Image (cartoon, rainbow, N blue to C red):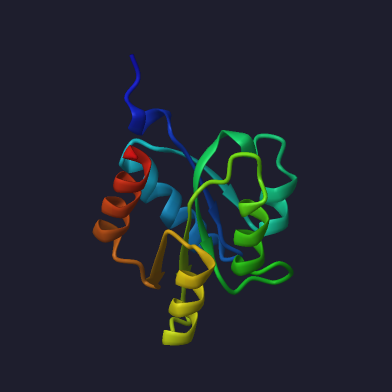
Length: 125
């Protein structure tokens, strides 16, 4: 029987390939399955998005930003939690993320240990 951890699929959305690959590697090393997306639009168009249990997304991306992605995900039949990561962390963005319903907020570079703990807590609910 598979554990909850290994059966969870996490989407990583970031326009920076190095960030996508680093986050993907971190999550896979913790035994989660990962699907990476170079943009919010690619995630929203993915026929397999219903498999996602959580999304880790950059806020500042060309085209649709992380906040617009969060609002779109909240409209899904089964919305999933969204954790934001950003290189431009400000108190204003943190507050906007909290008010918008983000499950977490991390400045880049991301504290890997804290991110893994939060993801584990969210997915165990």
